Length: 392
Image (cartoon, rainbow, N blue to C red):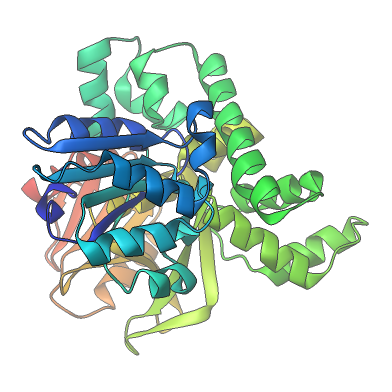
């Protein structure tokens, strides 16, 4: 709500994108209910009763019939990608200033150059993610549940339905599998005409199994070919793009700190929600370092940062996060039990040399808690996610 309300009434299309079941519809309802004194036109394009509006000309005609010329009008469209040519209808409505427009979509390609050209750049983009750790705490207070919130968040992720109606871990992960299945069926197989679902799932599982490591379409292609799969590099590349477009995975590009440029040839993938990995591969405690990275990555995105993997003269910094000209560096590790680990984790951060805040986030911080002489803020993952790390 806080990210959307500054744009209310500004004449632009407010576009909220995110994976299915992350809460976009609830956000639309809350926004529409806050439009006191306005004529609200609300369309959920997942409902069969609105199938006749899945063409832009039919949509435009319907909206025109609902406009109240004596009032301020607000149009809400949930899952707008289900309307063929939606961008043409919205461009017309914006040009005539008939209503204030809010739309959601499960496909991140909604804001691709093709669509943004049609709507003339007249939009504000808001990325929506499943619940953060602190939001899960709020849901626990509101709806109850058992077990430690932090542990449960790591085990099942943050899809709102899992915290609104708390159930056991097995049932929770089955719910996440169902969400992924629907996303793949509707946002990839149906939209792009993909027939080889098995190959798509193999690629998704490969990406999820390598969280925290650099990966490329060539890596995946070579792995598939070595296992006897008949596939082309172009197919692998396209399938990766489809998984990104459906908001199932998110790519983190590499930022060369000294060169201040993006290295397009090096990148990592993270799950949009860690529960997706557990649902498809099972919960594997031995993958804890990757789990930490995934959680920190999505946390930083949720705080509004642009997030990259950092490279400083060949040394890796887990995350370089930028927002409005400010930057923070974040290094993640389970614990510091050996001198080599300490030299690597602190050394990589200290090698940066600038004055931006630097965090070393640990699952088990032990005695390494506070601020070092070189200014590195050491804290636990729980504190970092609670936004209390700066207190040290």
